[in-house]
Length: 151
Image 1: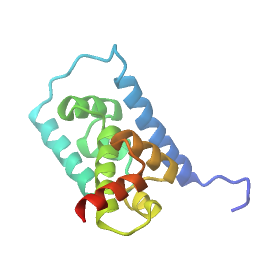
Image 2: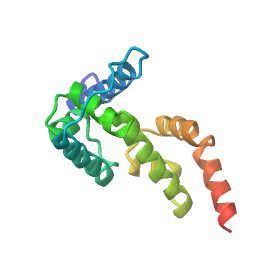
Image 3: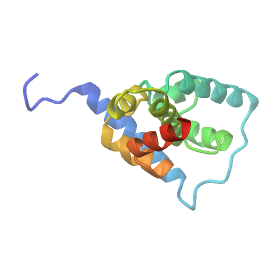
């Protein structure tokens, strides 16, 4: 591949990430639609999606993958997921990844970068920002504080 070429899979990944972020932002606006009724089959399918997210939080599945599993359009999937779980799929998956990374920071000696990548974050800067926002400390400071409490 020459220097000016773009990897098509990176474009697809960026498009999925952008789509998730855009839908999350649209649904968090004050004039978001009122909550919707969720059918029993939709609840079961959302349960299947939650199981998939739990099993493969570190992989790079996108909104279209989750929507397909739930047999809904991406837009309707986000609405149903949010009504059932209380958060968007992107927010849920990010929190799941952050919780797993926090556990690994305390339990392993792997580097912060290795943990971030193993938990599904694509780059260190996004991980560091999300972690500090969620836990109030950088991953390194969190590790140090938690390990000193266990010893």
